[in-house]
Image 1 (tube, rainbow, N blue to C red):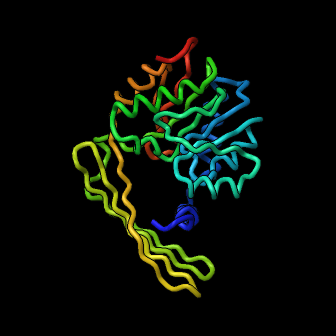
Image 2: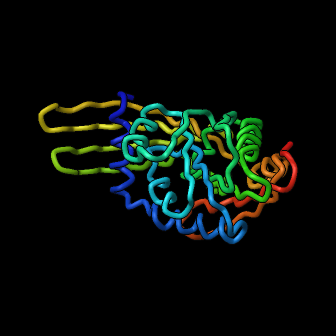
Length: 242
């Protein structure tokens, strides 16, 4: 991976795919308002370059982000200078305040590694919710839905730049290393090639449900909408999470 340019390439690829950030945010807001109509503050966990935050800030008086990658944070802060973006690991973070709603989108929860880490992440998120606060989480694929040895490809052309992305996903038990190759051609600079590996984990619906409940949240799974893997929507019950 080479520096901050990856964050730009990330945005280019998903823009070319037509990712429906607006539709996703509308669905998130609908679920939050149905459970907490007066929600005024939101933290987007694993916020990436801030594409969801850019829309969610129109719906809540206070929005903030949390992200592990310094390169993603730099791009998010550049695009949203008025939105605080904290650096931290979702498995254990502190922002110094609680929120009426938390989101964890784009199947980012799949990066946590193990069922134990899933529990740590959900507990950390729940600790940042006000009583009655809402946690909206987009899971990654459930084990039975994963397509082994899946190959994906993208070709993006924009101005003087062409980016090709090819990935291969091979399952190893409940872990999935996704190997991604990029070829990035830019007029005046030439061609670069680099490789990235995303180490994802497959969790069952029951493992997600257990993690929510142990974190002190009631939870329901919602299918359909703009999310390929559905959504888990939790509500923090009175009292501190376990």
